[in-house]
Length: 143
Image (cartoon, rainbow, N blue to C red; front, side, top):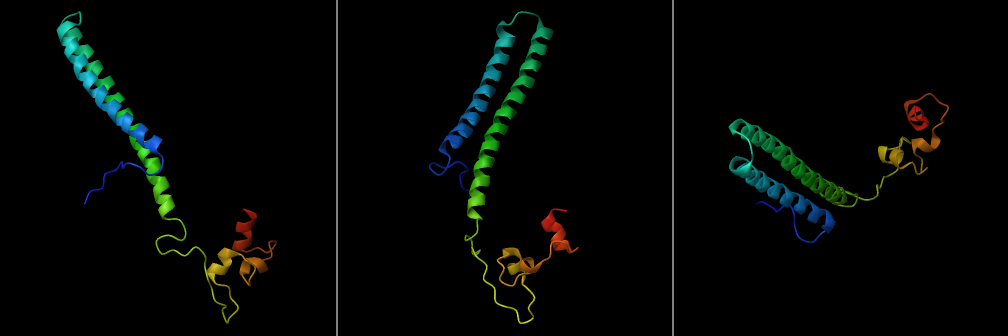
């Protein structure tokens, strides 16, 4: 059903711990803003308008601080997820072969796997004249 995002163990435990600390820091910042607003109305010098202005400033600063801390935590989780997804989708995983096996074509035209491999086994890249004005030659020259 729902898999917890941050699991114990696995790769990059320090990054996971940092992400958790940033989330905890965001929660503590939110609690601090609420306590700060209470202090502003209870003990801060000045009148009601002064208290209102300080409260608006505290709410805006707290909002940006909480959002920033949560954003950093999500970026750390994103990096961990990108690494995990890259590792899971590597060649040889999920039914993807790590090597491409081709058979010889009776027409002598290389298959796309032979062209990609460029192993010289009759592929077009092995026979391509780089001075020739073809799309493949232009790509190989970097144009």
